[in-house]
Figure 1 (cartoon, rainbow, N blue to C red):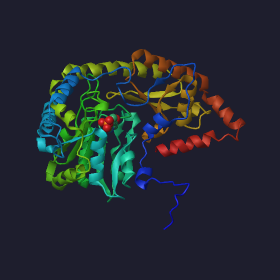
Figure 2 (figure 1 turned 60 degrees about the horizontal axis):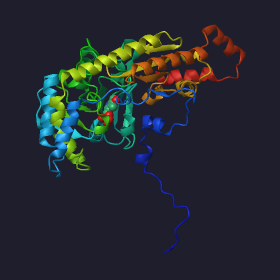
Figure 3 (figure 1 turned 30 degrees about the vertical axis):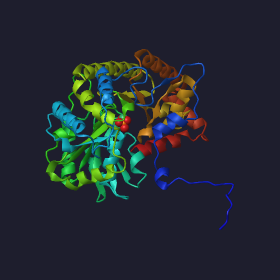
Figure 4 (figure 1 turned 135 degrees about the horizontal axis):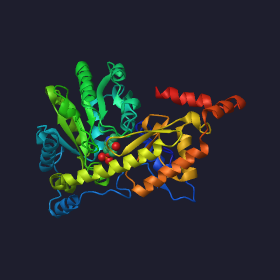
Length: 437
Ligand SMILES: *Cc1c(COP(=O)(O)O)cnc(C)c1O
């Protein structure tokens, strides 16, 4: 046996790891685009409201302190401790009027781990799950184990309603579930009762379960009615994924849950599957589980009311400022804390696509945002609305200046295309449009 250690001992990652890509984290942590050193950076990228402005309920700190003072740090049941699961059941009943049992709740390490469990549990390699476009980075979990993501469209001309015909056309014999995200990221849209009922009817016709990403549940602006998928489903089984991250503004605590709304008795084997999958790591740490009842019970309604009305003011301000910028079309949100903005790329021939637009915005104006492809929706960029008001206004002003510097109106655009035929912008722009449809 050769006893020589090779000079180039290079290990390769597994295909599971290679196919697991989170575009948001990659952009934030490895970007090679440098802001203008003369302007202070304003970041509108990650959906983390604790950056500079919003904060958790004080009641949560007290609950965590009390939990840490308890003196047991033993192993606990795979699905989560009983009092945490009971507390989620009470919380769901209080908020939605839906009666569930502690046994219908699974405690997880955040919304992401709730989603991951549902995906891995429902689909085999080569089978598919339907996800919206634009959407959150669900592909980060799906593509590692070769689960296929098929996308259905949300319609920007109808407040991002689910395009039902398109959704139905995407279902095939390998479809295992429909994912619905309400209230939605990146659009900040809460779905109407009718739209949800229609999706439920489609799921029922094809006998598919719904994975409902409810991390922004009840996060709607004053005057907007929120409807939960599970609350409206009579016969279709629903896995509702939620947690403390967004509504309680505690992303770093890493605590989430899954509620099994077992309509039609469909989830008998799936329940066992959750326990089996959780046998891999047993969920979040015991102290934070012990704190959960206190956090859920003691956080007053005024905390949520205050948060959403502050976000609404920020949303309105940004919407009104951006709608007057030539070349941009913002779509007004009615919940969560994001706004999508369409870039009329035909007026910005200097940029091949939204990625170049957003990169130049960083380089010239030090404003950072995520371009459309991060959400599988080219031609747009996403605003995070939870920064302090003065920063948000300043960001809008800089975006306005940036657009004024690069905007070219239609007649001039035509001239440019005719005079400089070797430039490829137009065909590239077309490619961008084509992938949207
Ligand atoms: C933030 C977010 C989640 C969950 O995030 P966690 O930090 O893992 O709790 C899930 N879905 C969407 C759409 C989100 O924006």
